[in-house]
Length: 112
Length: 112
Image 1 (cartoon, chains in turn orange, purple):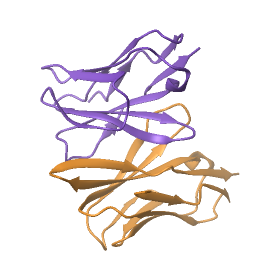
Image 2 (cartoon, chains in turn green, orange):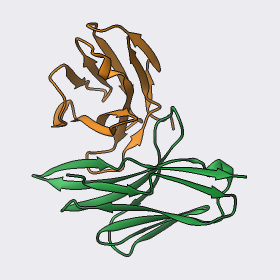
Image 3 (cartoon, chains in turn purple, red):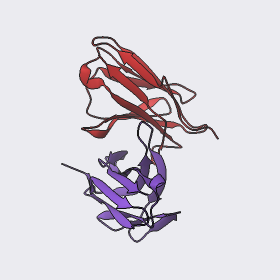
Image 4 (cartoon, helix red, strand yellow):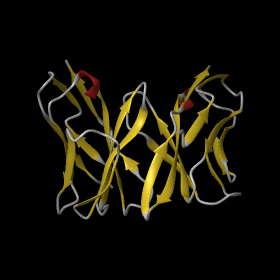
């Protein structure tokens, strides 16, 4: 079963058109939720870690929020350089081991 | 501070061959995880090492193996390569297994 689901799969925005990406999860024993940005052919770049419902983190045009079952990555007035795939991952404690589950990502394309 | 480094960056092999990939974590990080990324399956967890011990293993066949050295550097080996092993192999390091993971640039493996 899917542990982490990201939506939409792809998103096309005009420069300056704000929007949100969604990450919903079903794991129990959540220890943290992570957002990464990945450019084609490169490794994921760490953006945010969220640990508890109600927590928010901001960085430039990006703001991440967390509820008990999902997280949102809000992009305010995006620019073409924000085009990338955004990955969400959850860290769960299972049998005293930490396991990371990644979503399939949202591919964002910002047109000038 | 240098990031995670992976060598080689690109590799072309033929079916039946074996391959070894290397990962040097961020200085001070003792936990290393390996992931396979393909367009169809996304990021899939291979294994996790901490203090030279494998703590966690994903659902991959025994042809995939790894190890970690006393300086925290890690290698993964794939024997008897199959066409389906073509992927981007990513290494991620963290201070400990519960901490945020930082990814390297990946090794692009192509199996012909």
